[in-house]
Image (cartoon, rainbow, N blue to C red; front, side, top):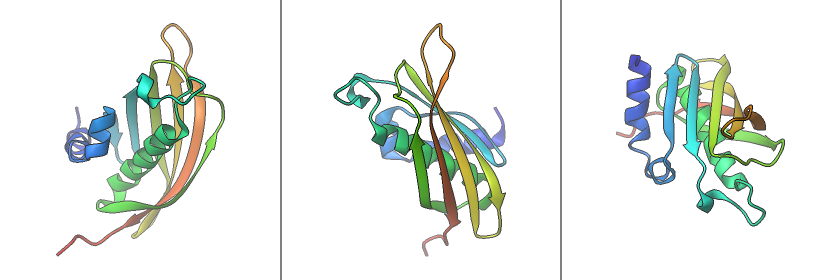
Length: 138
């Protein structure tokens, strides 16, 4: 495990909502992240697909983690998500990377894959967002 991953896991552990959902940080490096989430029945909507809000949360957090590796203290200032197909399976994996970064903001992109045992992962959503550096409280 690299230093980025250890720091990222510490940050993730301070996010109550992420802990509630069971989000895991699999990889973190300069400008990129891989987050995963085991699909639970409580995450599904009436048709049995993972609710769009769960996918949206995962994209938002992945975008910010990726941007945060370059900006440090930051928040999402905007993002857009496209749902490509219904998410089913047993695990979601979000892979985000920084496309462009400056001193105060980064534009990042995220792909979310749904995994089902014995099958090839399926791309279910793509998001792009702007991550903005914030000044620490004090």
